[in-house]
Image (cartoon, rainbow over all chains, first blue to last red):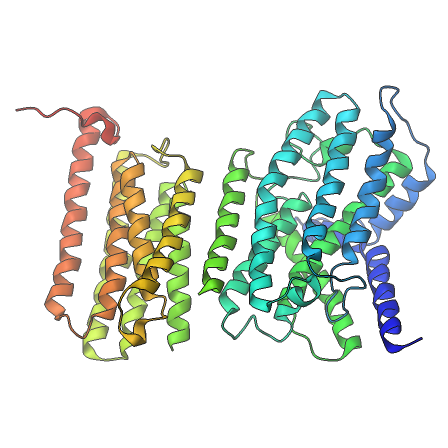
Length: 311
Length: 212
């Protein structure tokens, strides 16, 4: 086995370990942060693990009006974050799979997961879920330009079209000094907003309300139960981890030591989860008509970063 | 030092976007005030600490950062409005136009025959885009108070231009501009009060007919 193969193998192992092992911890940390701020004790940090284990042991109730699409939604929602993460470097650990233009594949893999969730929601024939699906589709249309403009900025400032090189732009501490520092700061802010929208966090969607009229993502999975629902929750946790890694890749400078950087990434993930909890405690959910306004504003912010990096 | 001025100018441009996108008047006034304060920091940063730039800074701080926001807050308290309800063009559209103007300002600034030391600075694009944002505010909003805010942003843009010329421009001119602005705000305040008393709202829509 030559050196290249070993490094691919070890980075694959690292990616899988983080995705499958650590990802359910992040929702736990967010919930705990919110509980502490609100003066409650809150559920234990490892609660999401128990939830997922419990759900896997239950049986499923499947409506007779549904087709195979209803079962396909959770499976795709679980598999796609795993696949998409293979294109993204985790801190100093390079991506196991990398080729020119993989950013397009990355964005549309996430789009595929959303497409299947929407289809599964509409397959139930419930009007509430149709409404949630419509909202999800609308907001995803507004989020995609943010991600693409952000990636274009990164591609331009790193002169490459692979996520591996693009996302390590901040590794050399370019965020703090250097010609593209300002646009990188703007882009990391935009990616943080993307994290909040994509994972249905508070200014955009409240994952805790169980009032169908106000929900976006949660309303689409109301009819899933048992192992299917466990897959959805696991997939959502991995997606949260993946979007958090996107932000951290830009922010964290690298020290050169693989081991230290790995620990720094995990610590960064925890800190970011606490930050999300703080944002959720401090802000109220936006009215639905204000969300597009904020998303268009964020797109313009990333567009502005693009103008700056072009000069 | 020049690095920090660039960050200040960036913040000024971002504040433009914020004022274009928000509907709450209180937040708008605060944003314009903080923009004024940021601009007040620029003369000493660019030209070093000397009498001329310090006077400019103090003038801008007092007038842009304190007196005008105070007057405007008093005005909205008196006429009891909180929000710009229905702009002529929606917020998203205004934001888009603002972004296009900013992009245009950056492209245009690179083509101007400037002094070599100003060639790649953010000053000219920041000034042009701030003026543009002020213009959009003036054109698209219905309430007299947001129009006043648009006028203030426009003036902030001119102030950024002025900073490049501080050495060439006598202090009296700058002082005159600041004073003019203050008087204009006074007059607008009085006019707003009159409109409000006449129509019990401050929509400038009502001012269509000229009477002898």
